[in-house]
Image (cartoon, rainbow, N blue to C red; front, side, top):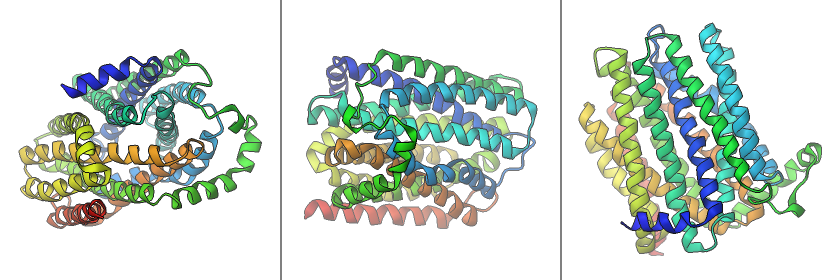
Length: 422
């Protein structure tokens, strides 16, 4: 298989192997932690969850970082990225353990969300560092395309595996807050392992270059405003990067709206109990992960055949056609098939987007641009949750939402297939 051959080529690069190990462990822990939060917020028997409550939880967890994210990006371009991966994962492990204590103590929701928010913020910081560091561990543009197809996708699969592990632990443990706390502790241990794995890389390996570093925090913060303006100006000078980021943000909006709908369907429309709904959600996560893997196999060939903009357009077109056909019955089997399709199309477009950004943005700006990338993702996801909260009935069935998402996918498809023709 070509994907096996490509992976074998990349794994011959020692530094790529080490960075990939950190990514896999980090995102494995992310999957465990995020499913633990979702199970606690959505599927706890004592909570009467609504679409508005889910949207509020997403806003609390994601919007504060959306404000601080660009500032983190400026620091990311001045701190050694290896140290970010080391210290970020160690800190997340400690904070996740604290979240488990809060779950057991049955504290007010505000304190629980504050702890979860901190872990989520550091998570985005680490992911931006991983993406910005990837060009430092591969030596050619062709290998960078392969690395963008395999490395983030492998991380997403690791997150899916972590989510599956979390579902298994949650379903096997006795019902109640103890099972949620146990899952969070599993994630904390894996975060610590990810931090220790970063020690296998030299401190300066992942950049930025020493001349670009500002070791004093006060000095780095003082230059934040200038750095943000420079990053946005740099992005404006690269219209292709700006276009793919806009398209990926819209696709993230669609994904977020459908995620809230799926949560509501699993919670209230499918199954006779919370455990049944949680099991169906776990199956949907696993099928979405299979779609991510399929995208990693197909995308390198597709980008070579259709180009990055052409492939993004084709992914959006496939989603525009298949998403309403599979989603409108509002039945588990076709909706699970839709999870695979959306996993494939979203990840295929993301691989192309990552490649465009990394290939067109200068190294000294990558941290800032990828932090903006994360901010766009977060705002789109929270916005989608807010729209879904307004549109979804209590059982999650909304024809208008499904059709509206299909229209957005179709607009992206028309725009990007037009870019390719020009």
